[in-house]
Amino acid sequence: MNYELREMLPKDEARVLEIFKQGIEGGIATFETTVPTAEAWNIDYFNHCRWVLENESNEVVGWCALKPVSKREAFKGVAEVSIYFDNDYQGRGLGSVLLKKMILDSEDHGFWTLQTNIFPENEGALKAHQRNGFKTVGTRRKIGKLNGEWKDVIMLERRSNSIF
Image (cartoon, rainbow, N blue to C red; front, side):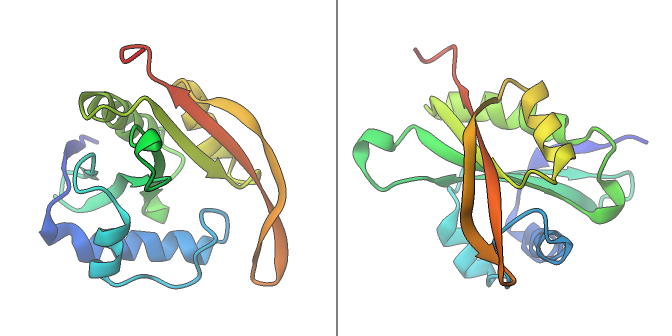
């Protein structure tokens, strides 16, 4: 199957949020429990470094975007990676396609550190990030509750070689 990687457009909002909803329902992708409005989602994420992956039918099957980790000027080059796939497209190695593009685009926009927090049971996401240069910083034990259960996350980061 052939896929097309392209910038996320406003017309993709409903599908992006639909895929995010699948991530919420799966229980191993996010601490979020409700799908935000498109407006709230757009406020949370940077306007650049947003990408989607389409299948041969021009249906968005995955997306990635960056969030700021802080409003402080010192951290303007640090961003949190979000990457989600439709349930039917998980486990196909497509995460690397989006991550590679995200890394290149983030460096073009001056980001020197990308970070992410992944639930330990989300093995596919961990492997995809590790294959693309993300290193484990550590495990944050019982960092938050999801549906009444304490959850750990593994924090990973990727430092740019081109900015330093």
